[in-house]
Structure formats: C-alpha cells, structure tokens
Length: 452
Image 1 (tube, rainbow, N blue to C red):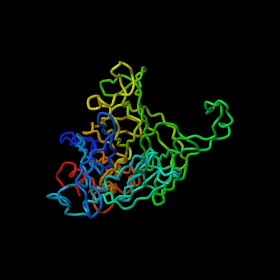
Image 2 (cartoon, helix red, strand yellow):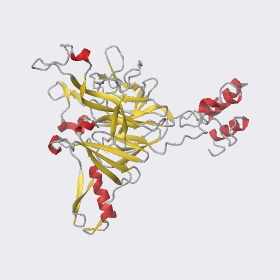
Image 3 (cartoon, one colour):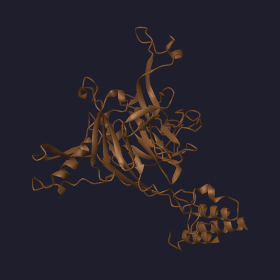
Image 4 (tube, rainbow, N blue to C red):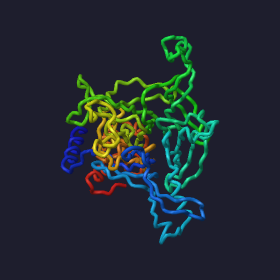
C-alpha cells in the first residue's frame, strides 16, 4: 500500500510539474569594493557639498549594505538596502536634513577589509589601517565599527592595537550556541620546540632560525570586547578566503584555488587526470579547531586570494552559498606568459568578475549559479528572513514537494519517526501525524489549498 500510494503521489507530482527546484534566496552583505580604474583600487563617490552645521564634507559612496535576490533560476543585480537618496537630505544647493546627511556620509566608514560579521541584527566591521595611518604604539591598527543591519545606522567605533589580531578570513555565529567564531590570522606565534630546534625549518638569510610564525587559527571571538580565544593548537597556512557555519553547527572555509588548467564544457577546471581542481572546501571542528578529515573533491573553480564571503540558509544546512571570483585573476598575458592578468584590461579580461556559487558540503559538488553584475564582493553575507523554519516544510529544504509528503506517509505508517524532523513533521495544527496531514499536504502540493 505504501509503494502504491507513493507511486500515485509521484505520478501526480510529475503531472503537475512539481519536481524540486533550487531554493529561492534573498542575500544581503557588506559591500567590499573590488572594482578598479586603469591603475589602482578606486572607491567611487559623489561629493555633495560642505555641510557647515556638521563641519564636514558630505559624500555619497558605494559602500553600504546590499541585497541580491536569487529566484532559483536567475540573480538580480545587487542594490543598496537601505538606499541612499541625495534628495532626502539635499535640495536646491542646500542641506535639508543634517542627520540624514551624516547618516549617508557614514557609509564611508563601512569598510570590512579585515572581516565583518552580522549577528543579532548588528553588523561588526573590522577596518585594518595601513602603516602610514598607524600610531607609533600601534593603537590605531584596527578600527571596529558596529552598525544596525536594517537601518545602516552607525552605532559605535573603537580602535584596537595590532596585537588584537583581528584580521580574519571570515567570522560567523554558530546557531547552536550563539557564539561567534572565525579563522584569524595570528602573527608572532610561538612554535613548538621540535620545530624550533630543527635547523632546516625557517632559517633566515643570516642562518638564524625563527621560533615564531604566522598563519590562520580557528578562534572564538567576543563581539562585545573583540577578544579572540585561539582553539586550534597550532597554525594553518592555507589561503582561506571564507568562513561560515551552518544550522547544524558545522564550520567550513573555502581556499582560493588559483590552479592553471583548461576550462571544460561544464565551466570547471580539471587536472591531467580528469579530477576537478581549484578552490577547495575545508571543514573544522569548533571544539578542537582541527580540520575534519574528508575526501571532498576540489570545486573545479578558480578564485582569488582576496576577501570573499559565504553563508548558509538555515532551511538547508547542506548547501553553502559562496560569493567568489570568476577566475584566479591569472592567465596568459600579452607576452604569452602565465601570470597575473594586467589591471589595465580588467574590464575585458574578467580579472575582477565575481559569481554566486552553491556548494554541497556533503559531496563537494559545486555549481556556479550566475555571474554577479558589476563584480560585487562582500566582506560578509547572510540570508534574509531565514531565522524561522516552517514546521510544515518537513525536511527543511525550503521546497514543498513530494519528498515532504512521502516522509509524512512513512511516519504515519511507522517506517520513520517524527523525532527525526525537529518538530516539523506535521501539517495540521494538532501536532500529530495522521491521514489529515497527508491529505492537506497533497492539496497544498497540488495548489488546491493555500499553504498555511
């Protein structure tokens, strides 16, 4: 009976075109400028005027919080949300709203070149200053700013010394314990004696061995005090470019890749043995800081060793969404040599083009969903309106389809347990799985009844 019922439902699903589709997403992120003019990194801005009341020159900049929508088939161009409209505070050559003008100008300061994270409605950006901006005592090495993630209001700004080690490949909050973690780049770290005493290890030009080193370490971070606590008993040297944690508390980072190779018909790069190469996915144990040993293949896509971002939808912990580069930034240059592509041709050689990727963390299978118009990258990224999982979406994949109905049938017939679905395995409001749930699920699936 179960097989007959399941087959009947699958036939109905096929008749009505109800096969599972890619999950629609609304993504937001903190804009990380990566567009270039002919010679140098360049932030585009518009000078509005001198505000005498604020004693400040007011600019409208590209920095800010951006949104992009993926409907399962196409990705729209990222747009600023909240928007900044000059007419809201400046008209006929005069400032009409000083508070709004200051708010708009503050986006100049939303720079997360050393990392950013969104937690509990607050964005934290870490700005690493260059040497000529640093005080002799290093007190201005990092500037940490807090922002309202909805309104874009600047909430606070605080400077930290270089010793705070706030440079990261990414930060993220673990939904299971509410704590923030990140892959932080630590400098001047003591090395184990067995390494220090090895004369073949880190010997400088004068023949003197070093007892310190620098690399990445998984750490927890207190976002109130910005104090990091190392977890990894050592350092990693991979070129990590992202860090994200899914709803199950599993932590992942992406490496940059950058391998030479020929692009196949599927758009991926393969080595001479036919194996995908390029950027790779790494999993970390948040308790030990150690990599989880897996045999996942490389993604087949080349990205770059520049800041990128990744995130998960809470509705599907198996898929990581990665805002990466379209290529490694390398290729055959005008002299026929393989190396970094010249900046002066960036508009045509795609050196700074970016894409949205979907990565299956269980298989490593990666697909490029779509290129991102205007080459946007983000210093952090998150899924919007994703905190509440619909209990009627039984397998929590974000898609209402035959799979949910079959699970209900198996639970009803005793072949599965509702305990395996975290309270989602019912459709009607009696919180019991019975034929009423199955019937309502079928009606919803076939469009006869609106989804509750």
